[in-house]
Amino acid sequence: MGPDDRLPPGQYVPRGWPVLHYGPVPKFRPASWDLRVYGATEAGREYRWTWPQLQAMPRGRVSADFHCVTKFTVPDVEWEGILTATLVRLAPPADDATHVMVWAEYGYSANLRMIDFLEEKTLLATHQGGEPLTPDHGAPLRMVVPHLYGWKSVKWVRAIEYLTVDRRGFWEERGYHNIADPWHEQRYSYQEDEPPA
Image 1 (cartoon, rainbow, N blue to C red):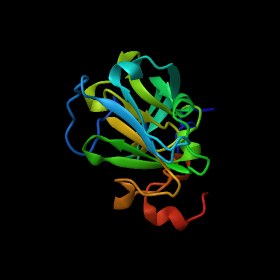
Image 2: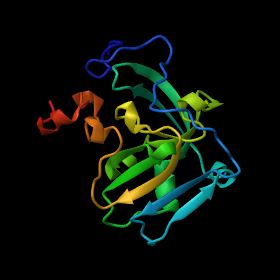
Image 3: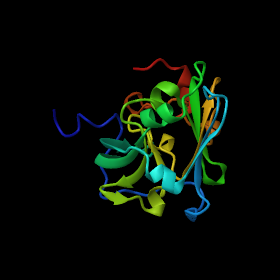
């Protein structure tokens, strides 16, 4: 396999890692920070973890390429954090939950199908490249969904909402594709009626 064979269509490998996000970088306040899981939970209740409690959760490591919709791919990114499979064991979704909404600071959001949320390399990252995440890259907690475009890998995560009906997130409401598969170049919502190549 040649070096370009692992790149999705239209992607290139940049020098360094461009930093892109909407709005300001939030200030992390560990004493008041928490992560909530709510919505269509199996128990019908909300779950909440403080920052020390989250740090004590079982951890996993993932190595994966990171694909941005702006056409760059960063190869072999090393992530560490809480695998979503671990999170759903601690806060199980209801049987009829089909999607999640990932909520971040300032009300930013991205929706995911449950099958994408539970993919084996999907995690809530606290570290990248063996070091704690920097604020620009989503510290203290970032969703990482390596098999989808990077806007689904939400920075500054504060809550996971289990959904029984899909609902579009921030960029999806503004014309981005609802699924975001880079291998099918699912960049924009007008492509949603097109069958995958």
